[in-house]
Length: 253
Image 1 (cartoon, rainbow, N blue to C red):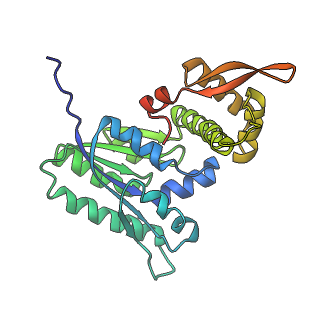
Image 2 (spheres, rainbow, N blue to C red):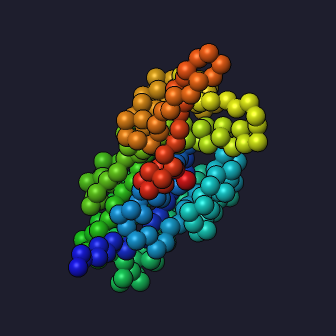
């Protein structure tokens, strides 16, 4: 009998101000919350996920519905004082982490999403004193070296895998929406390679070369295949989605 693989049990604390603000300002994109959660859940039995932030900020408040797709634990850290607002979020988040550490007998791993060096002390405490595995997620080029050095492991986003996955999802979303729009129509639009690249690039304000590269990769990996169809006097290659493989590999919501 093949032994059952038991994933480590993990609790997760997310500094969403760090994630959202750093990602939008430094990498010109929004956090892929569902993709991040799905990838993390492949490695860990995630029992708790808690997001922290000053959601009085309108841009952050608009993110709450997306956050609630993975968790209902959203902690508002708004501070009435005009000073040290970011530090206030850190303080509240640290308090929750230390409180959870006191009852973490059944928890194997603590995961903290932040780049702030303020968290290096609690990471060391969890790692050394409580002998917990402590991982850090953070935005690339926005993580303190002190925090990196104190953790068991560090994953920076966006990484190449995450960036590729984002383009794959743009393409799949476009093709799915086109399929849905064609239902019941006699004259149907057939998605071909370059028209799809153009549409995805324009709608998502994405780099055309990267979209084309991602579409080629999806064809090579079997997520998308091409069939030949004769339309009028022309034969064109039409893009089709291998939904079974897409769902199996979890690359689309």
